Image (cartoon, rainbow, N blue to C red):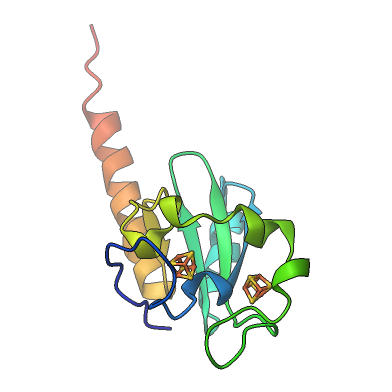
Length: 132
Ligand code: SF4
Ligand code: SF4
């Protein structure tokens, strides 16, 4: 799914409720061949991507909340889940806040490219170690 562009915002009025259009779940950091193939399997699916920051990995499912109305308003605002209550505009990526997730993989090709670069870096790193 194409991501809307973040702009400076002080309220949510002109946003299309980006924060109500996905769910995100933390997953174990991949460490072996099987784990990496698991990630490839995730991102092979439509509207599923993987996010990673320095220490954590997440799977993101782009799916609209059933309680979002046609005007991008919450139909159960007073009873909305705590996750929604904690999401603040000050730290919202759609209001210009720098997302803490440094990488998002939106398909097998993107992930394979990153994996290949990671392997190259590791190879170079090993070569760089000089014996005394
Ligand atoms: S919190 Fe952010 S993503 Fe959610 S509606 Fe407001 S500006 Fe949009
Ligand atoms: S419950 Fe309301 S605030 Fe929470 S994701 Fe759904 S529409 Fe958005």
